[in-house]
Amino acid sequence: MTPQSEDFSAWYNELVVQAQLVDRGPVRGTMVIRPYGYRVWELLQADLDRRIKDAGHDNASFPLLIPESYLKREAEHVEGFSPELAVVTHAGGKELEEPLVVRPTSETIIGEYMAKWIDSHRDLPLLLNQWANVIRWEMRPRLFLRTTEFLWQEGHTAHADEDDAMRETMWALDAYAGVSRELAAIPVVAGEKTPGERFAGAVRTYTIEGMMRDGRALQNGTSHYLGTNFAKAFEIQYQDEAGKLTLAHTTSWGMTTRMIGAVIMTHGDDKGLVLPPRLAPYQVVIVPIGRKEQGEQAAAEARKLGAAIKSMGIRVHVDDNRPQLSPGFKFNEWEMRGVPVRIELGKRDIEAGVGTLVRRLPTVEGQGKEQVPLEKLPELLPGILADFQSFLLARAEAFREEHTAAVAGWDEFVAQVASGWARALHCGETACEDDIKAETAATPRVIPADAPEETGVCVKCGRPSAYGKRVIFGRAY
Image (cartoon, rainbow, N blue to C red; front, side, top):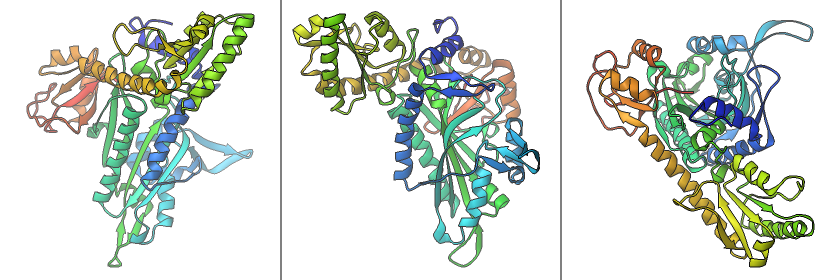
């Protein structure tokens, strides 16, 4: 593969295909997620779905096709999405009376049904979630990161007042941050988007931002407080305790298959994928070594070991059905596909009662292959995998801190965003954001929730800063 230092984009495009995560779809901008890649999504999906249900939300399914008139009822929303819409105008051999939009997001259609289902304050909060695919016509597609069709979950909730809706908005953001850190081992910065970066139709948009290994930012998940904007458009109202009709406050929030791209670009290296154990389809791969009788003996011992490891709740694969491939080829392949731990098992290992354990990355400097007694391997592996998960999170966090700096002047800002993130004061004006983007390709990624208070003047235009703290700027995917 092309080295990251030579061309990070080429490295990424080559790796996602070679590692059998994804293939290009027949329509420009679409993708086929292969089983290995889809398993990563399933593992993430299962954890996030558990969090969503534990918080009291119910899964539902809404139509893929949305009447065009629905989108037009919230003016800012349709304006924001209009360049990305795919529209069905003919079906059944004739022109439709009303064009149908292929779902880009579901605020409008879910809003229509919220209005039907909500009558009284007793019906609130209404907490819905949908696992679905969406279509957004992408002009510059990149597999997993920006595709015309992608998978996601979208939460949609209705509440009696702003306070309850904001609690929901922040709950979703915290859930996304938890998934990113605990499963994907990606340290994220959580906070609010600037007005110029808000979701179309939202009152406030919150985000979690991760840094990739080329210093660019990736938005890993967003949560939106929609106020009463969609409630007004779709008449989502309830009768309060005094019998008065009152508009509900709504939220929406989503995380997508973009997270797979985030995992690849946060942890991968020139040898290929580096998968955090909690998201790895195979946490351990056993490669038996030998030919003919020795090979059969090694394979039998590998299967026995694999069963013992599986009993510990570990996802294990025994690579014993490809005798035409050399052990070295298999070692390189599983390294490229990011398996956290590989166990090599040959005649000498079996005679010595050990397995040769190889981590995808050494968690301690100088640590390479090590021989571990076979009888102890199954019970040691949970700890080894947990240590590797923690190591990846700490490694990514250290990389982000090394490539983030507070800047005071424009020249310093330009130099910093060329390879990382700049923490800068900003006036909050969208026109100024546009000027910064035109000159540097950097955008305001997040107003960090935990940033210390600070005032001063905008790094670009010199007007007073608007947020009382520094904003993180960076180039982004």
